[in-house]
Image (cartoon, rainbow, N blue to C red):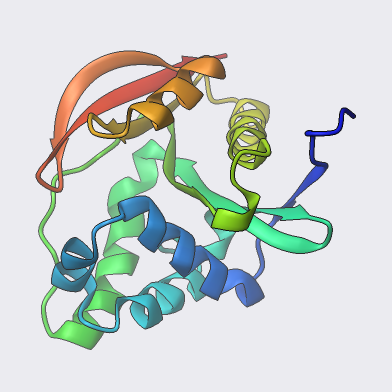
Length: 190
């Protein structure tokens, strides 16, 4: 290991990681107004409840945690794209319990890919290969389960993220509008 490299360990998330997952999902979405519109003013608490619940998009079951020197550095959430609607039903049921209504949004993935839904690294750990390690670990998990494609959406306004995804084998497939933003749907093939 060179002087600038950091040893990153990746593990499966547990229910105790729900707060971390909630923070990562919020950072990945990156827009507090969108979060408030979909999850209410106390969006972090709602996301934490979603992360603690098994059959939801952001469940700990769908998450990997990165650690550096025993400290949580970031996380990634991913799942079978064919399961989006059933997972959303669980997610939206929790949101509806808190807000009295559930969101209406277009699907961001579909059958035929393992979907990288959310990824974020906490600021003190950025620039040390943590995001790359999480992406590669999620890709390895997907390919080990027999999926041929890993997909994701990246905002047009986040070219640095696109550069990172390209560096680990993702290519642009199509343009999409999601949550009012222009996005690239990118995929990595086995």
